[in-house]
Image 1 (cartoon, one colour):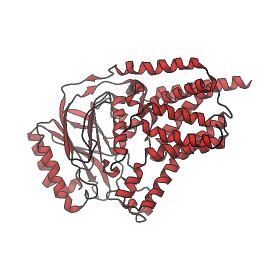
Image 2 (tube, one colour):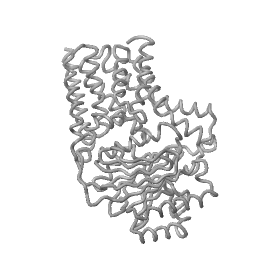
Image 3 (cartoon, helix red, strand yellow):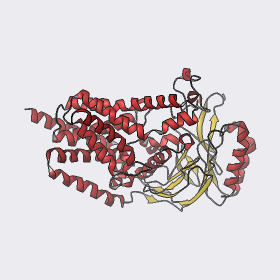
Image 4 (cartoon, one colour):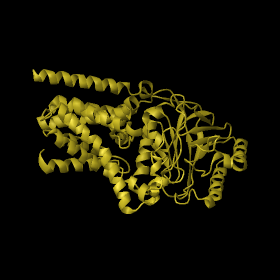
Length: 492
């Protein structure tokens, strides 16, 4: 498609993609979005494909991660124009990945896409884009196309090949539909129907098994406003709030608090607050997982941590930090604008290898906030962990798409690993998610709330846990080999 119509198509196709995700859940739009992107690249030059790739990214990230503006403007206290500029620069930079992808694809396959281009090259290209985005500069896996499919038929494939595998299948479907649309090869509808029809049957398979008795679990959502969370005069109120809400659930086996629920260092709270809390928890045979900052012995370096309190005391220190949230990549930026000097924004990463926390007699795969968007990092906790816990602070993003999108990502981790998930947030959305990635109970946003549920720990491995990403690497290699073969054959 030539001219401005193709450019507009690419931009609108990108803007459609986020509607496939939470809170809209219009998962078929992810397929339509990819089909329109591939269509916009068909029959154009490499430079035109680069421009349309960038426009697609502008639409996709401009809508899908618009919550960055909320974090910078509302809670980072930056002016409207500056926050808008910083958000645009972030979106524009991410869009460059798709510009490079479009350029390279058209260099490999100039002119009109052949059937092998559509079925083999384009899907692998999309997969490479997602994997690169999730790795480069510490990674930003947000808006992986496969995550949008946890509500749809392709969800059945996630325990087999993970979210990245679901993204590849989605892109392969879009490529097949492009062949049908452009070349009228209707036979390619058959594998599409088979692929999408098999998904629901696969989802009925239980890859993991129950272990022991269910754990009575309570989630505490304190709903402390972000604007006052770290103010010294708020500390006592916060301590009393979480202790009081927890005391109402001493009948639970496990109580989970959010990320940095306690806005003070462990050594500041140890004697007068944490030790008495631990003793009371032991008396009621309850374990608590709570979030707080923990400093090194030198009191200079500090971690964003989760602590187990009760039958055992131990710590998990967050390993994958959020740039400009947990830390500022370039210290010289501090002082330039308020957003670069947020409270508690100089965390250091925890060790790569850490023993799992133990609570209620089970080993727990803990992730803090952003960590659970990285599939391979959550994989490191299983099969040893029998349940997953994600503790996060969503208050930075207000009433935006971010809390809904993050919950959907968390659900995909439960589906990949065949483990139940307990998700505790500061102000919503806290939730209990079963091993199929389905929400069993959730809190409202922006309210103080507690949520209780019996959580069934599970053991065993899904195929994805066993093989990790090897199947999609091998599948991609096979697809590229077949593409190269047909390319060479057709050039003779």
